[in-house]
Figure (cartoon, rainbow over the protein chains, first blue to last red):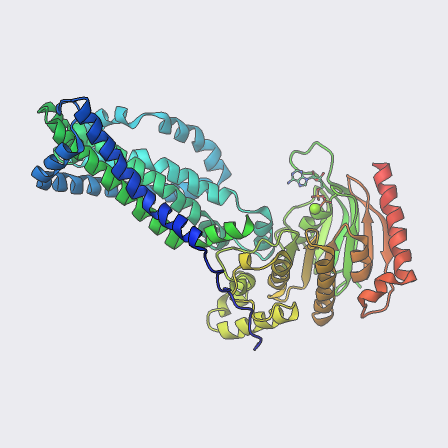
Length: 275
Length: 262
Ligand SMILES: Nc1ncnc2c1ncn2[C@@H]1O[C@H](COP(=O)(O)OP(=O)(O)O)[C@@H](O)[C@H]1O
Ligand SMILES: [Mg+2]
């Protein structure tokens, strides 16, 4: 028991100056490109004398952002909240349904057409019904976010379960493992990377769903702010709200990705080793 | 003496009732503690035989008796290893090896309180297969041969009475394969376990087995049995002896015949 295992990590070879420069360029690239995008936008608007009620320049939008700072923050926060609530519902429901689908061929065969059909309905078309049922308020955005985002979660969890290698299942069953044992020891851990992979897609969809529903079924939220601002022809505010949406979307996406990396690092590392 | 594994006049058909059987009128007996090898052309029903003997499939006709009991559900005590090591990538090698203990009684209820004993046992097994100190590694940090060794440990940790090996070394290079032959040989000598090894490598079968069963092409049935009376313990050198080569030749004849008949 005393033999020393071989060292896990060997010292990395010295990185050449050229590689280091290349890495630095890669790290800077997103910032440079983003800045460039806004510069081109600003320059084009000025050169072509585009009126700001048509397409405001980034500086005008920045002005509007400062001016309406409090409103933007308040409504962004509301949208974030609606998105997260709908997303949380979708995660819980998606995991339960995904496990049921993955565990039982009968459930899978029976419910697939229904699920696919349901997923094919554009969720904008459902919002009027939600207003009819629940009135204008926080319920339609949360439910729209939920409805639009649970599908990828269900499909991914079910895929993780239904692609268990038959050999490991044989190993377990020959030991006398119950279906539940196989689910707990193999199915669920195995479907985790699939689940977390789907969360990135799902949260983005949930975000879309809550903004869509807010624009006509809520008195709060960025979606609603955009509706009101465009009714007032306050185009700079509309654009400021769009930029706020984009920034918030990126933040949510990055947070989900960080969570994914933390929870299922083994899947990525084992794939790297296999590939 | 009644056989430990007694597959008697078994016919098995996959899927519907119609269709060509995978095995037909198959009779195989393996004594307790015996090392049996099954060889035959691919698709002849060797893996099916494994599944029948472990209760993962049930025959359409005939009886399967293991350890004095007619098999009507998975046998609950067999260790299995396949060509694909199927270690779980989210568990360390050690935790992979402990997996059967989380399923099989009485270990299942004792595991938590006696964890240290079981871990020591797993470490000993690891040492026996030449993986001393590798328990903390994840499977993807091990080579294919090392993964297969760990998979053997997993198949043996709960001291099964029956060890089923389905082409376990099919994916390995020749040197690693011969190393693992010796690992299996020593494990079988150390634990009084009954082994059924499916292989398409005739030298592997002759080196390891007490008795070799040759199967015909699909639908599989037994066309020849050969007792290997080479003395034990066998050394790799024996694979170059005349007696060894003669047996391999004889088996080749049977297999060639089976393939022609197909
Ligand atoms: N789950 C299954 N469903 C239908 N047919 C199968 C199944 N498993 C095996 N078979 C068929 O049964 C025959 C025997 O298969 P198998 O026992 O795996 O052969 P071997 O292991 O000797 O290569 C093959 O022809 C194969 O196509
Ligand atoms: Mg096979």
